[in-house]
Length: 209
Image (cartoon, rainbow, N blue to C red; front, side, top):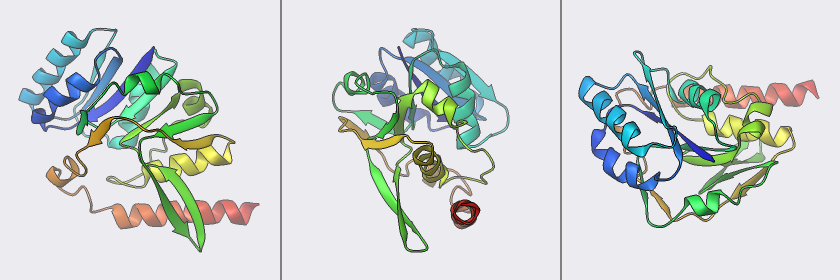
C-alpha cells in the first residue's frame, strides 16, 4: 500500500485536482486549522477516497513538519509520499512510486544548497517519498522550524548522513509552485532564520566530527 500525507490549510479550490491525483492510495490529510467550510470539504473528500484514508484536524496550524510527522505516525503503507496540496496529475504517477526501493528517498525535483562552499543536494518536499521504515529510522521530520522552508533540506541532509540515497524520479505530476504559500500570511517571514538554522546544524555536525 502507498500512503500519501498532505497538510492542508484552506485553498479548497485545489481539492478537485488533488483528489483525482491521489486515487487508489491511502490518503492522510492533516487539516492545519482550515476554515470550517474547507474542513467539511476535506472530510467529504476523505470519505469518497476510501482505502483507509484518514482526516486529522489541528485547531492551530502546526506547520509543515509537525503535520508530516502526524501523518507518518498513522500511515499504513510501506511507502509514504509527502505531497503538497497544490498538485495536478498528468499521468499515472503512483505506478512509478510503487517502484521505490528501501534505502533511498525519492522526489520529482531536486536542488542544491551551498554551505561554506560545500554543495549539499536535497529533494524538494512538494513530492518526496520512500519507505516508512526509512523515514522512521532517521526520526521523521525535524519540528523546530518557524514558519516554512528548509525542512526538506535538513531531512535529506540527515538521510544521507544515515546512509540513504537521494534519487530523482520522473513523475507525470505538476506542481503549482508557491500557490499555497503565496496565500498564507507570513509564510516567507521565517525563511532567512530557517536557513540560518540549517547552516548551523551542518556546521555543528562538521565540528563534531
